[in-house]
Image 1 (cartoon, rainbow, N blue to C red):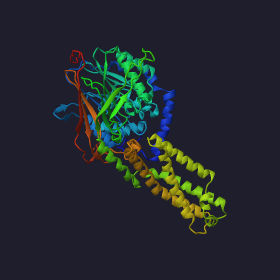
Image 2: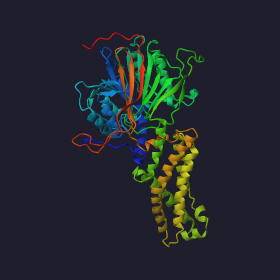
Image 3: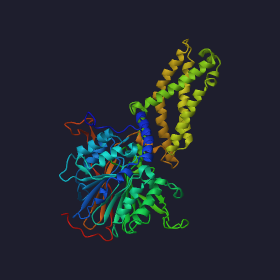
Image 4: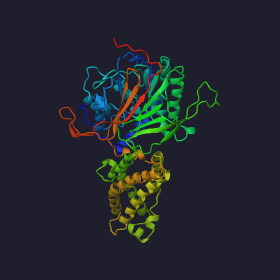
Length: 579
């Protein structure tokens, strides 16, 4: 337990070295947890309570909310939590606060630990809804950031039937099945880093599927929009194969082909998009919605494909050579923010050319430049009794300044930035050019300083090292930021807008364009969805005033940017009021 009270936090600085290094460390450790200490299998032996959540007998309209990727900066997280905590008038409809809130993954950033959950998630939600006479229920599935400590903190927050402000947690596992009124279900699955659904979880959902009645419809919440990442239907990523297999083998086959997948919800990408089957079902089934706007930095939308062809996996009861499942074409129907607004916001990365932005970036750039300068000076001095000898040799100051350590540093820098470029979707050669730009600036500045006729001995080398350190802090930052911008723009012009798109937006930490989903199941069993967003979130002071957020700048009014109705299940059961 912390000694001091949690305090509001700013948006995560993703380009800060400490954040990047700590996140990399957590990724490695989380892989070990996933392989050797999978908490999902432990949870399965503790409780079957998740079977018992049943709201099917609820009378009247049933309201529930969905948000994902919360727990980043206070302003954006609190703004959405405050909307979730109250009834809203959306168009001509007076909506109610959800009796159920589902969080779709990544409840905290940058990594999972108790302090981060307290400051970045529990604090804004507790301030938005301190208490409630009839506490709404809270369920959550873990995303990759929740998995970074092996679900330890996630289990403490969501798996012990406690409270987050006025919301009451109910689950005993990292996955759940919720029986809603009039033939509707909401399933939340735990995909553990996109690829693996454990055996006890599969058996759990097969057991739930057998309880489904003919015509029931399922809303599936998962932690990653794997359909977005399918470039080639013949080589779909493992994350999609797992999701498609779950739909066909558990939802459809497990329920005797009685239940249908009505809607898939996810987060992970911090924007809104909705994809519909190209040949739309008359009852509006099959949409896939990404709604990751609960608080985390904004993700771009101008790279999203207009269409996707989604392959299916072969059913286990069909011959291997029997291609029974044809791919399904999907079309993008709605994105938010709009593509032009997203593209315009990409230019904001250029503000990071100023040392006042992401201030700790110098901790990486300065030392790399200084090390290049020091190795260059040492290599020159090693070849000549004095720096003056190297100067007299002319080109020798360049040719002789090659040592094994200098080559290793330059080679390592080029290899590392090449890998980074490829992981960001850009060609590897762009990363090599990026590295060479830094090396040439550092080497050129070092050579220019060594040519100054000062009889200081090797003190001249130390002077060059110190000066080049400053060159790295200022000039290296300029190269780094311009590389991100130019590479991204080159990708846009070539029809590859994904090149470094995430880095360009994550580096800015944009708190605006946040949203959540509000649902209603009406008396006829029809599902209605409102996508509610804030183009600009309010800004608050970095400290609380009398235990409350102190508003500095008001945001925009909430707006409905997407609206959707789904027809009622085929046989909506007769409902009775709760006794």
